[in-house]
Length: 268
Ligand SMILES: NC(=O)C1=CN([C@@H]2O[C@H](COP(=O)(O)OP(=O)(O)OC[C@H]3O[C@@H](n4cnc5c(N)ncnc54)[C@H](OP(=O)(O)O)[C@@H]3O)[C@@H](O)[C@H]2O)C=CC1
Ligand SMILES: O=C(O)[C@@H]1CCC=N1
Image (tube, rainbow, N blue to C red; front, side, top):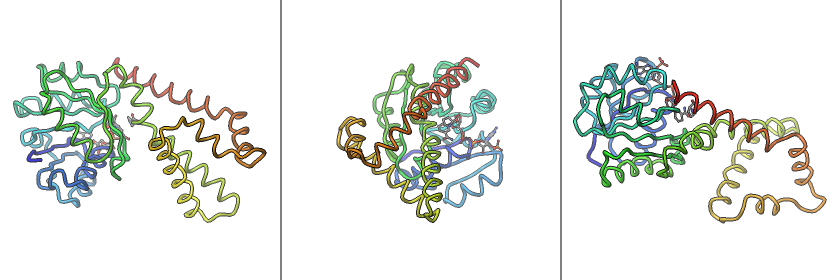
């Protein structure tokens, strides 16, 4: 792709997307520019061979596609700073929880091309999941181009904007719950005497394999669970304990809090 991709914000998500794009070789390092206030973050990014700067306006001037990878509470501040410097045809990609397309357009004060996206950190290892909502200013070719970017480090789905709070809960934030699950399983294995490194490897591989089974067999997750539970065996004992201690309802409640927070953030 012959485009300059800019990032404002070199934090966890900016670095994950940038790293994912670089690994896929969709654009070369010299066509990526990133800004941040923190020297330390920029040093990290610079090690990847991309251009870095402390000046957000410089990124705005050079970018054909501009990713705003900053926290939601400073979106309006940064947009105010850059809005007079962006290219006419730039595609703005927002990734902030609770930032809707309408508020982004309002902050720019005109109808810019906006794609609201919700990615997740597995982008860094080429297994990201991103949902996107393009506004009506983008042509079909431009939407395809954006899809290509997010596809370069994982899966992408175009969704309706009303689903974005649910997306945040089920894929933007969910790697955190999965990491907690892996950590807890590893702790239990350590309790049983297994060395910690081996416990992380085994727990993580089990999660990876189980996820692949859901994606590749097309079978209902409940049916896949049943295949593991031998009659009067070990697994059903664990399943019974999980049901007794509210495993599923705990996940559902946690995700409802996540969605609620996303909705609250969009009202600010
Ligand atoms: N982390 C995740 O898994 C996901 C995050 N997101 C979204 O991504 C966005 C970024 O999140 P995340 O990467 O976690 O946050 P981080 O705090 O890791 O990254 C934000 C970066 O922006 C920098 N920054 C702050 N102010 C400015 C400024 N005025 N100009 C340039 N850079 C600035 C911060 O520096 P400093 O630390 O010094 O303030 C920090 O390095 C958020 O909007 C979030 O909703 C979306 C999906 C998943
Ligand atoms: O925690 C957050 O607000 C961001 C959005 C999704 C994942 N991290």
